[in-house]
Length: 140
Image 1 (cartoon, one colour):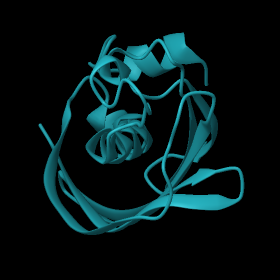
Image 2 (cartoon, rainbow, N blue to C red):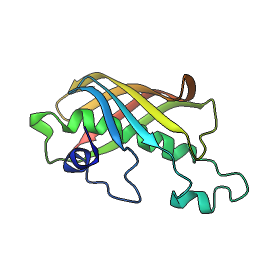
Image 3 (cartoon, rainbow, N blue to C red):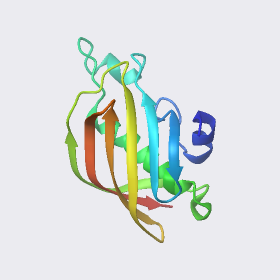
């Protein structure tokens, strides 16, 4: 799935659209997405100018956007918006810097009515950058 297809599913737009491509997806079950981290990202101007580092909260947001694509691609949720319901046990293992490509892998563990629960990991190469034990999404 390319950026145009992603934008047909997510309401996010630049500068807050944080995924560039979907590598693989099983609707409502799993997804692997990519985020190419560029020095031109607006947050690098202040985080930190001498040593640019992608803020952890934006790594988690990119993961959530990927998970939202997996859920919002389902026929019953098309045209809706996914919101955070909860995030549990987030761990950051590695800095993400300009030039990195984040690979976001999420699994949807449970989907009932309009609530989804899942977990995920963000990688740079084969190194874990971030792990989230549990995401909860609410679709409205």
